[in-house]
Image (tube, rainbow, N blue to C red):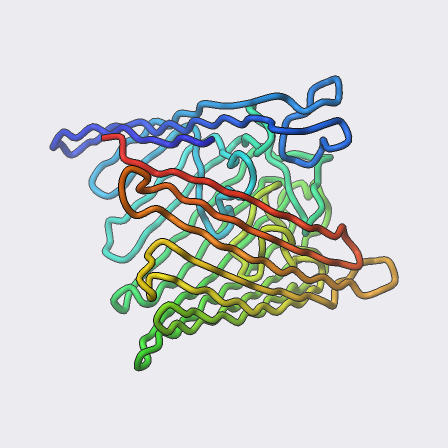
Length: 355
């Protein structure tokens, strides 16, 4: 269960003060010692998973005009640090951030994060790195710093992005992105393109980092139908780096496999349908398939992997359950160099306005 609410002063002054509160509480339904260390639940000294765990995080905020400063518990959603809610409890970070939208169409952000709360803990941890699918648990960083911006124009049909981030003494990473959509008759065509460039930084605690990643996700929408085709490539001699246990904005990253190993090339086909076109708003279906190869495994053979996901979700549109969402997801992932996975998820969310 995750509860997120905001309290803002409503006085008509130039300065607004407020408070964000993030409440998280997880309950164990079933677990035994042979099922621990999955990254889902905290593990006690006796080898058993905790029956429950939770956290309350606060962030003070101050807004002047269209510029806002936050200090405390944060959940940033950036191209270089994407907020993830795919597990039981979403992670959070501790630090400060500033967001400014003073210029129409331009949003600028910067931040300094010093610690994190992982998805399977209630306390705070040092920041660590993830290279490909391998955690670098032997070393930690004192801070993650970022600065960047997004500029939307062309009636918000086009957005360009530029970001720089640094996990101190481990790696630094640049991102450049382009999103564009255009109507063509009854169709709406779209493109989501991105390029990352990363290298080691400072004391180089995990050694050399050399990764360039490109992704493209093209879409075509007609009525309730949306078709996607994507390509993603890893270049350089290292896998894709990120902050430990975070996801990324890469076009081919799925809930189970990331397709970010050294030299990996991957392709995606996806189809979504919005049943609002048939008079059933709130009902959505999605299926996607990604296959990757050319992985440098270091074991004398080429690595290959593939994943197929099926999603069906419904959000209630009318009272008394308005805002209640139910999603069922089935995933199948196969690889010749990492663990095969079969997975079913039931995700329930509820969004409501307190006042």
